[in-house]
Length: 196
Image 1 (cartoon, one colour):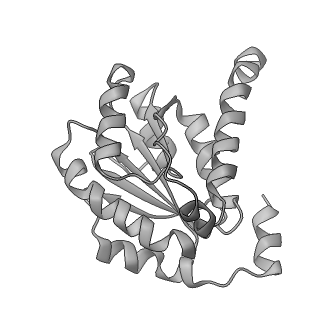
Image 2 (image 1 turned 45 degrees about the vertical axis):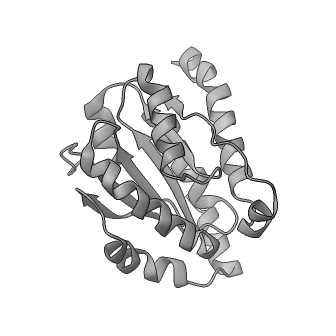
Image 3 (image 1 turned 180 degrees about the vertical axis):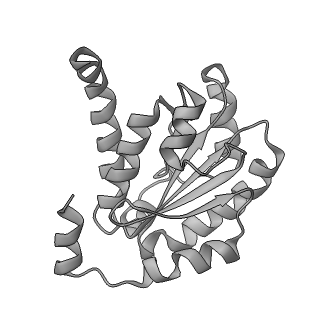
């Protein structure tokens, strides 16, 4: 058990570093030259949950949208431009986006190609899920059937607030994120975020 945890530390450190670097103010990112989209990271559920938690606790974060999709899923590819557009429109408000592909590891190049074609911002974390499907499904939401696409909204404390089984619309995203993104960040809310 300890050996497997030690083996995961480099991956967890890289995820935390990616989240920290993606938490830079959007104005700073847009002022810089556009950068290439990094290839998706192959990860198991614990690493993905760490990334969700780190993204939720990153400076300025108020909500984290996790979208689970696959290159072979037509509804996933159809909703992707709307999800990315919604993220671009609301990242300055504290929205963070994490994309998790259900594709096989061997399809990493195709996943990267689809994400690049969809205009994925370079500050977005993207993963290819590895490991047991049922553990992954139950780890995100035990009521989720595993059908794709699926989206999960977490608040600034990392608590799941909403689940969409099937394609998500910008209207439903706006309704679900409205109160989270509108909430002011105060010293008190920052203190509450640090509590387990």
